[in-house]
Image (cartoon, rainbow, N blue to C red; front, side, top):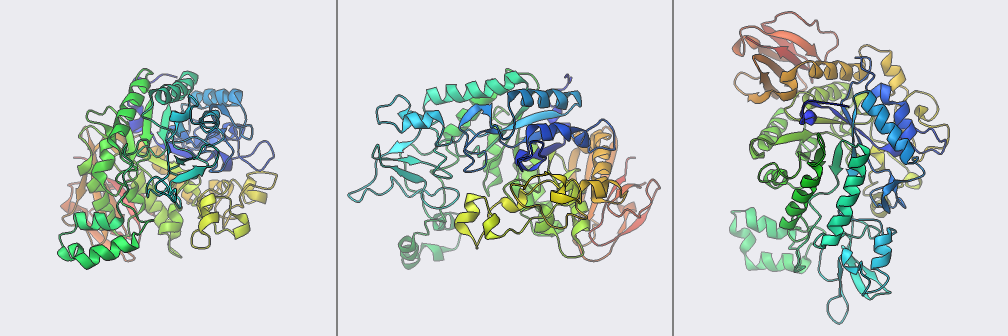
Amino acid sequence: MTDSHNDWWKKAVFYQIYPRSFYDTMGNGIGDLQGIIDKLDYLNDGTPNSLMVDAIWLCPFYVSPDMDFGYDIADYCKIDSCYGNLIDFDRLLAEAHRRKIRVIIDLVLNHTSDQHKWFIESRSSRDNPKRDWYVWRDGRGSRNRPPNNWKNNFFGSAWAWDEKTGQYYLHSFLKEQPDLNWFNPDVRKAMFKAVRFWLDRGVDGFRLDVAHCYCQDELFRDNPSIFHRIRRVSSNRFWDRPFVVNLFQMLELPELQDKIYSRHHPETHNVLKEFRQVLDQYPQKTSVGEVNSEDSAIVAAYYGSDNDELHMNFYFALAQCRWKAGAFRRAVEKWEQSLPKSAWPAYTFSNHDIMRAISHYGRKGQEVQRARLLAMLLLTLRGTPFIYYGEEIGMKEAKLKRSEIKDPVGLKWYPLYQGRDGCRTPMQWTAGRNAGFTEAEPWLPVGPEVDQRNVATQDQDPASLLNFYRLMLNLRRSNSALQLGTYASVVEGVPADCYFFKRELDGKCFLVALNFSNGRRETDFRRLANNAVLILSTNPARQTGSSIDKMTLDPHESCILDISE
């Protein structure tokens, strides 16, 4: 598979697959690698009858005890038998590349499973050669408390006591996911060897899980409470009053920490620079990071000082906006302003860890209209879009019974939080039994409204959400301005609660107009261009292809117009 452009990922549309939930061919209720192969034509068969995506991102399929469903890896270079084997993976790569679909895979570098042979050796004794491959510390004080107050990213302390060796080990997530010690050069060599293993097999890049957590403060200082951040950023002196300070110190707010010592450590950037050096030894590979921070400048720093770290980073603020045009516009502009000049954004509204967008943003009677608007926004912004499996058919978040919950986070916090299972339910291929996902009992129940939210039904309806995605993806693919063009928001003359922006390249200019309001909004396009041609609307009834001066956008309608001179 050849491509004359090393930055192919800038033009690409990625489709995220949670293998466990995509398509089962083994009859065990779990999706597998052969199931992905069987559905590749759905993703891109070379014609507009498919989605015509350019790349897929596969969530973990490695050997794992599945305490965190694959994100606790017990062997980085083997396939878990429930998904298939390396022969199946090689066939998947070959079949995907034959269809000009690139393949990137999840790379979990922060931690391993506690069943990984490295950790089994590490915890066998204090003088084992692999002891320092993980983060071990003595307890504090006569009561042998944890080494510091760090909290993991799920629930409770970030430290687990090991009775056999009499020390605590660090786990930024589940206790079954011990953190690797990236200050140890042998760890780096071993992990980069695993990276090369998959690059040598032909993968096209990696999505880096929790890329901001690799290294922690070497002095293991306590994290301050969230109150520390309030005082740091607030100009109100109320927060400095002694009784307020004492009150918060007494309460401690342990679960609401400002994790300044347990994430975003400067050494993490050195790790990523080394990772990038490995990646750059293989032509036309890419990377995208999962970096969590409320500060866009902190996330932008993971591109490196000279684009020498990650190729892309997700900007999750777009999935957290209120349903207001101004909120989305400000989120995009904040990210655009924070990025280094040559950096490239990555956008998504849904993934395997967050609520499905149609459920997050949908309102009764408006769900499809809002889903269409979000699709148009995602596929026209400057940056690389990532579509989560099922988003193209409007799959909803499932509400599960306690007995159906598999996610350890949901099991711990239920009923306040049911975990992430609701966004991980099986792909809905048909309106039939188990949504056509499996003949067996599925590992999770299928989601709601399968009769209308499935591929087979929507494939036959020209006005369906699925076919709108196909139109949008084909439009984006055939217009370089929508792939690589500049971005500029339009404010003057824009109706209330609407978001307009331009994408422009080599004399071609598109105007994207999105109405986030519940009302009709009249727009005079003569203020924006001498000639405007309606190319596509989220309203299937709109007549396209003709010049228009004015247009009344329906509630939650969006459209694309060619306003080239």
